[in-house]
Image (cartoon, rainbow, N blue to C red; front, side, top):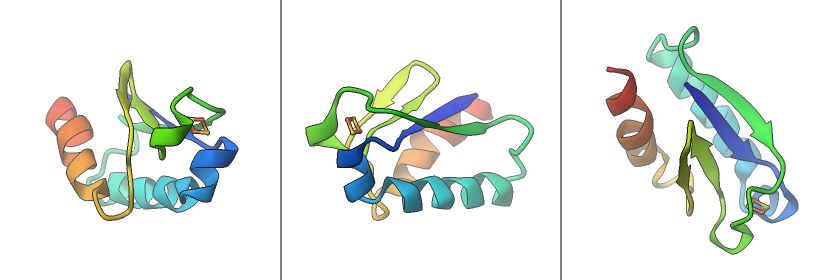
Length: 81
Ligand code: FES
């Protein structure tokens, strides 16, 4: 599974860097390092709704540190189980 995290300027301002780091920690914590890969991406086209990520083909907008656990459970953990 690939997770693209937008590091375009709008998402960057909204904290995409810390979201990317947080996601990396969550993946390591769940021992998914060999299954889930995080990659930075340039603008995914939904700047006003950022932070934007893409989990395989699934686009997820409005990701924040506050809802990241929920997003991770729904779009990552449920799909790798
Ligand atoms: S800057 Fe992230 S979607 Fe455009």
